[in-house]
Length: 364
Picture 1 (cartoon, rainbow, N blue to C red):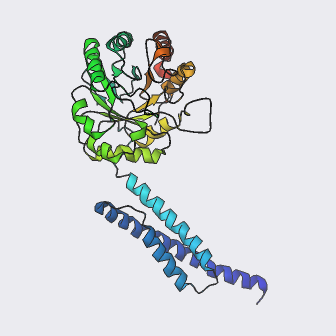
Picture 2: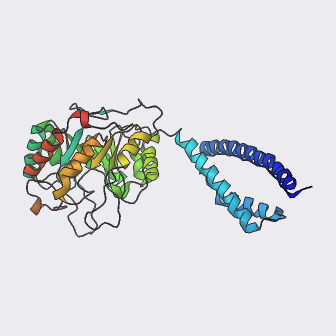
Picture 3: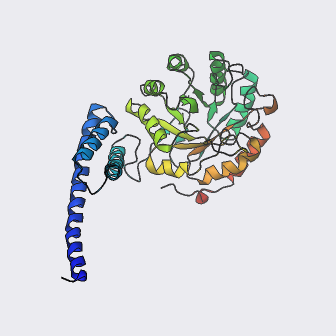
């Protein structure tokens, strides 16, 4: 037999083996998906490192060559990784936050007529922290005049240093409530601990989960049992998958009124406090049915580029933006560099309102 014929004969033997391997890989994947569903019912995780190690040991023990055990391990590790990705993709189709159809949108309504998620572009604004009645009243009057319907009423402030201003606590929430009632606004405030929920429930219209608490499962589960909306900020070090699953903690408890907020991620840039991940907006709109807000204050940490970021947020497909506003930012007790004064806020509103609805790009 000639070498050419021998080569063809050997290749002809390889082709059906490839098809057999393909069939077995797909059969293995189908069984793995069934295992994943059982694990979901049991409340256990997909990845089982002990089980994976046992399978690799058994394969190495049975291996008679010519592949080395190291090669066998690499090959099957790729199979395990592909299977795990398949299980996670399948599981994502069943989670509550996942968008099931293009026309699925969660619209969150408030008592003053504010609606988030209905294709309008809304603002959440106000001081970084409540400092006095006069401060909140001055800001609220300007917000109401510009059609803003939700005010920040931060009574508690998580700070990097324990010696920095930590907020006025319940007294600050009382001030925020009084001012909001005067101008027809709704109040949103950060809850730092699940023990604060009953007290804060008397004053706020929505709970705010800060970046530091994004993966605080105890707090998220507790808020899942509340009837009021929850705004969940993305942590500066969280992937979008981690962020989506954090929202799932709230929704799995029964509270489906979840608002997502992109607030920037930590990168090597030294010119801004964080780096605004604007790509997260269309991705979150594509993957979930929840309203998405852009935080232009904490993402940059500087007021001089607030307007360009506001315009970017407006055309990104976001449902709104959050901006910090203070009567006199230079004397603010927290985040002075990123808060806008009242004139700067009005200019931001003018810039945003100059963008017509036709300029807004659809997210999905």
